[in-house]
Amino acid sequence: MCFDGNSVRKMDDKMDRTPASMGRFSYEGLDRVMHEKARLGILSSLAVNEGGLLFNDLKQLCSLTDGNLNRHLVVLSEAGLVESWKAQQGSRPHTMYRLSPGGRQRFTEYIGVLEGIVAKAQSRAQSKTTQQRSSEGWSTT
Image 1: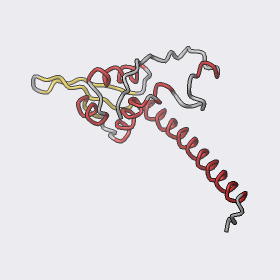
Image 2: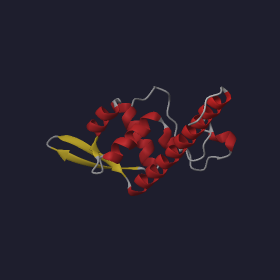
Image 3: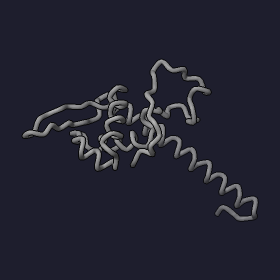
């Protein structure tokens, strides 16, 4: 997943959560911090690599530049979703990232919300297809 170049802004926890302030997401539970395409890719990569990933490995997996990845990781860290550790290996510094325990729980809940949306959409599409066939004289056997 890659970032499309739009600016990133931090979501303030004290922001008004009324429907008008929720922006373009019409489902409650779609957390803007996680829902951005690049951040969802980062979180997904960290979710399947429980021991964590080095910055360069994460950069390669998500196809992000150093600057884009760093900015997204700052937002995710400030939201308490990601933890990091710095270590020196030879003369080179390395930074390891992983989901925080709370971040793993929030990400799992978020995936549940997405699964619910997909299930509802599939159900509605199936119902609409069945209704359309019935109205056209098709039987449902």
